[in-house]
Each structure stands twice: as C-alpha cells, then as structure tokens.
Image (cartoon, rainbow, N blue to C red; front, side, top):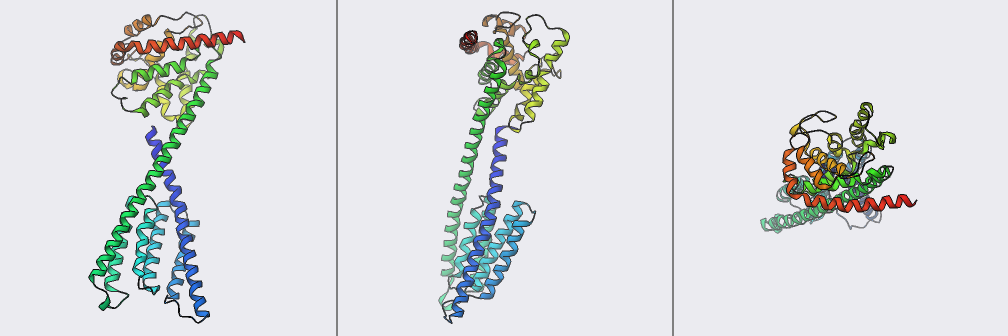
Length: 404
C-alpha cells in the first residue's frame, strides 16, 4: 500500500469519525431546540399570554421523531453513512413540520438550514442532493401552501426566496470546500509526521543493529542513498517524491532480516560454508515477514524480499528473472552490491569505486538490470560522492569505537 492509499484511508477514517459525531450533535441540537420551543409555548399557555402561534402538536411530533432518530444513532449497528442520511431526513422532516406548525409567516426560511447542515458533513454528493431536495420542497410548499394570503404573496416573492436559497447553498458549498481542505491538510500533516517519526525510529534501529559490526556500519543508509540517487534518473520516479520516499525506506530496511542471523556468521572472517550461506539467505524472507506485519511498513516488502534476485533468474529467494523482479528490488540489488564492494568486510578490504563500477558492468544482463546499469554509468560521480562522504563517517565511527 503506497502513501496515497494510506492518506485516502486516513482521510476516510477522519470523515467517518467526524460524521458519526456530527450525527449526534445535530440530533442533540434539534432536541434542545424542540424542548425550548415546547417550554416557551407551554409557558405562554400557563400565563395565558398570546405570544406564539406555534402548533404544539407539531412540536411534540418532531420531538418524538428526534428521540427515535437519537436511539437509532446511539444504539443501532447501522453504518455511519446510513445514519448520516437518517439524520438528514430527520432535519428535512423537522423543517417541513415547522413550516406548517411554527405559525411564522417567515417559516419558509427554515429550509435554508438544509444546505447548511448537509455541508457540515463534507460530502459533495449529500450537499448537492439535499440542497436540491430542500429547494424543491420549499418552492412546492410556498406555491401550494402559502402561509400568507395570495393577495400579499406573488411569484416575485417566490423567486426572491429561491434566489436567497441558491445564494446560501453556494456559501454552503464554500463551507464544504473549507472543511474538505481542513481535513486534507490535517491528513497531510499527520502522514508527514508519521513518515518522519517512522523514518527516525527505523534509522535508530538499523544503526543499533549495524553498530554490532563495524564493517557494516552505515551500510543500509548508504544503500538507501545510492538507490534514491539512481531512481531520480528514472522516468518512473521523476516528479514522484512519494515513490522516492518508499524506495528510501526500502533501502534502510532491506537487510533488517539479518537481525535473525548469528553474529558469528555475519562477522566470520573466512569463507562461509554452504550451510552458513543458506542461513544468510534467509534474511530476505525473515525481513519481509517482519515489515509486512506492520501496516505502515507493508508497502516495503518487495524491496526487502527481492533485493537479492538476479536478472538471469539465479538469485534468491524466489528465482525471479528480468522484469518479473519489482523495479525497486532491481535498483536495490545494484546499490547493495556497489556498497558491499566499496566497503571493508571482515574477509576483505574495500574496492575502489572505479573497480566496483567495472564489476557492475560485468554483471550487466546477468546479475543486474541492463537498463539500470546503462542509466547509472554516465552518472557515476554522484555515487562516488556518496561513497567518499560515507567513508569519512565510517572512519569517525571506527575511531570512536577504538577509544571506548
């Protein structure tokens, strides 16, 4: 799963939580309004004061529907999207009931609540559908059941009400856009923060593992840098920072499975036996199982699992060949081999970068993707710069370890 899928899922999760809470809030506000209206009207009745024309029966009916809606939202197992529509239908029912039962000459203005409330959900389809529904209902009721005598109400009044409704619906659309922008920005901030935090945790973990063996200190970070530098030259990665970041994380974690390999094998100064080599080969599968169990790292599995596959199909663990091998793994295979050759090992000294590049050329079309080697060849200087800089850092680390 790539970052865009994660962002989409996170955005949907935010919206689901938001809509669930909004359902409760709308019904609660409606209940408070209806209770205040009932108390207001009963107070006038007790005091025998004619200051309200509202129909108490209509208010009681709305209160009953409100309680039923609240029970559905609070205790039913219906999906949030279904409860959203139940809540909006409740709003429409109250608006229509108040049109007939409020006794206000301006009761048509209750319909202006429909686009405002539907905009709060941040759903353009709901906003559009319920805004149109509210407009049709308002026009029909105003025309067929006017609350003022026909002599004082004409088509101009109706057109003005429609115009006001459309204006308010337009502002409701702006509200929707602002709400959507707010959630998208929030998701972006959360995703970026999670990526940065995860990267720091991964780096700390990798350093702690590699520090056990000074010969491999910094290997994963260098492989990551080499891979990203090569990927920048590929059309598949250009103008795609998310894919580059994924490749970077793959490079950092490509050898994570070696945590399961005994140090006696990792640091052995002589040639490995066949059995020891088979144990070493398990690090790809172990690493892949480790990352796939963490949802935020699952998208890195291909690079971790297949970075030791060969173009000719003689690699491991699956024996894939050619373009069957994921592109990320083909890039990491070259970066991993180059760093291994240009780094000191317990069993040999580091090669010069020029010699390592010659080895990569020799493996073109057998070990490595020929297209990637052809793209890398004229851009060797960038890898040499990374190599020189990292060698200085390794020297500093080795000096520090010697002083301890």
